[in-house]
Every structure is written in structure tokens, then in C-alpha cells.
Amino acid sequence: MKKTILFLLFPIFLFGQSFLISNIPLPKTYVQNLDPYPCDETCLQEYIDKEMIFSFLAHADKKLQNDVQDEIRSINVCILNIGSPIINVKLKIAMLLPYKKIGKYASSTTNATFAYLITKNQPFELRSYKIENETIEDIQKALAQMYEDGFTHIIAPMTLAGAEQTAAIQTPLKIFFPTINKEDLQTDAPNLYFGGIDYKAQSDLLLKEASSPLVIFHDKSPIGEKLAEYEEDAFLYKTTPEMNVTNEFGTFTQAQTKEKIEDRETIKFAISRKTTNLEHYLKENEDINGSSCFINTPIVKTSMIMSQLTLYDTNATNILSTQINYDPLILSMTQYKDREKMVIANSITENNNVLIETNAILNNDINYDWINYTTTVGIDFFFHQMTNADREYNIELVENQMLYPIHLLKPSVSRFITYTPIVEPQSEEPSSFEGFL
Image 1 (cartoon, helix red, strand yellow):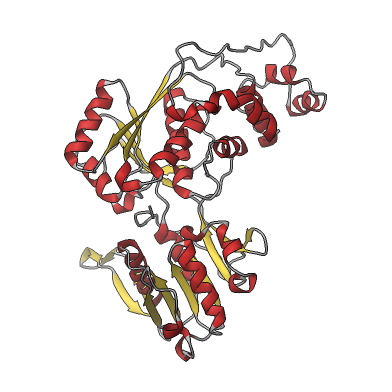
Image 2 (tube, one colour):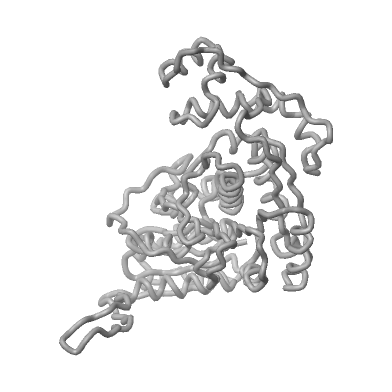
């Protein structure tokens, strides 16, 4: 099936990188349902089994509850360029791209948005507005031009500084930040939406698996240091929330308190970008033997740390990591004995095979790259807003923030497998850090 899609869509993708759609539209195919009888799930499956694809499509004119059947419907709608009898509006989506700040994501998030839109088989216009820097003047000028050009929905993969500048601008445009979690930006603007993954919630869940001493490895980036500081504090202290207390004198607010947890220790190692030898930290260091190790570094540095944990016989109880190391490279860059005790938190929990394959044709990854994934979730949400069509991703939106489920995984011999927690996870209040770019 993959080869079929690639062959039939090749003429589109050959010129797709410019995202300029020809003024001459491709001919639409419409399938008319002449069957006077309804067709249930079993009936639809019979049409599929008998390869009566047009009879199947005649009844499957909207999203199906059966995921397998709906995937077959989506693929054939895309291949056959089948027109929708319901949606007949031209979609206008703009990308706000501070390309010097976000690097490769200026291209990959645009590809993710483009890939989603072409699978919907509806007329659309996708336009990129590039800005060199995230100054309030540059952003304001770009937003004004978008408004003048008739765009109302904007995908903006920005840094936290850029999102803060954008939030300070009064605009009626609806803006989705796939890179930012709302907890990092104090705003109640109803037109701003956030898709950043919650690193604090991931850390909280992983810390339930940690034992003392907790050894935290981090790089010297602002986010690396901030995340290490949070994990140390969360591991060492029990925090009671602020609450209202009522007694005979009335109701008053009891402030949040912190209490040190007995018999817990932490050790932090700040690993610079140039450091490749950890002998000074690890060799014959009895303080870290049998510890839990929390690694907050990118994939290459993480692989180096893990191999040397094995080399210097630290006998770690486990190795914990957030979304940054949910990457298939971990399977090829480390030996199995280095990673057999590793647990990774992952929020990319919903897969759509049609979108994964379409992105793959564009050399784009939404299966492991969380920013491309959250961009896809964002354009899916905007498509739902603009057309009232069902969403492909059932990610809950709470106070304009996407709340992603968190799954704990283990990198096994050749793939990621589900990890069964030692402590059953409890629900956490949503809170986060700015994502890695």
C-alpha cells in the first residue's frame, strides 16, 4: 500500500516543497450512494474483503468508528481525490517562522502542516511568513500582514521569548504554539493555544520510579539546568498545596509548605557540550553505586553517559529520561546492556498511519519528533474549528493547552515496549517547561 501511495502522489510531491497550488484544480471524484439500505460495520467489511472499494466509499462518506476501516477510507479518499459532499470551503493557514531561532523546525513544521492538509483533500492555501528575529516589531508586522492577507489561523513554532512577545500583542488571529506549554507563559488570551509537551508532569511520573541517591545528569543549557533543579527539589521535598482552612475563627488560606523527605539524597553533574570522558565523575565513585540516574541531555550525549555508566560499573538501579530521548537512535547508539534498565516518558501516544506515511514521503517524522507531532495536533484542531469535522487526534484541550497522556516505555532489544510502573501513576495537575528546540 505504501508503494501505491508513493506512486500516485509523486507528481504532487515533486513540486510540493513550494506549497504553491496550481490554479488549475485536479479533477474531483464523487461517489454517489444509490443503495437504499444502510450499511453497518460488517457490511462495510464485506465490501473491503471483496475489493468493492467504490461501494465501500459510497457508504463511508464520513469518519468511521472502526479505526482500520477508517484508515482504508482515508487512504482511498486521498488516492482517488474524492470530493467531500459536506466541506466546501477553502482553508487558509499561515505559518509564523522565526527561522534563525528554530532552525530545521521552520521546514519540518511546515511539512507537517502541509502533509496534514493534503490528506484532507480539500482546497487550501498554506503560506509561510518568515521573520529573522522574535522582536515584537517583527512579529507585529508579520501578524498585521497575515490579517491583511485574510488569514485567521496561525501555526507558530516559536521559542518561549517569541511566544511572550506574541502574547503582548493584541490580535484577533488564532495562534497555536506547538513548541510551548502554557504553564511557561502566563496568559489568559482566548485566541492563543499551546501544544508543548509537559516535561514537569513527565518528570513527576518518572520520579515515582526513582530510588536514593538520585544522580541527575544535565547539560548547561537554561532548560537543562531548570529541569535538573526541579527534579532535585521534587525528589527531596514533599510539598503540601495551598488550601483553604475553616475553624471557629473563620476561613483562611494555608500557604504551601515543603517538608524534607528522610533518607533521600541527590547528586547533580553538569556535563558540558565538549565533555566526552566521565571518568572523573564515575570511576570508583561509591556514592553513586546503585543509584537512580536521571538524564536530561540530548540523544548523543545521553548515549555517551549510558555507555560510561556501564563502563565504570555504577550498577544503576534504573535510568530515567523525559521525551527528549524518545528516539529510535537510542536503540542503535547504545548496547542493550547499557539501556536495559532505562525508562522513558513519552507523550506521543496517538498514531495515525495515513499521516505518518504522508509525512514520511516528505522525509518528515511525526512518530518520534514531538514538535512535528504537536504541530500536527495543532493543525488538526484548527481544521476541526474551521470545518466542524471530527478531529483525528483526541487530545484534550484544557484552558487552551493540549493535555497529552504520558506513557512509560523501555527501549528493548529492537523497539520500545511498555513499562509497568512500580507505583501506579496518580493524576497530576498540568504544569510544564518550555520544550527543547
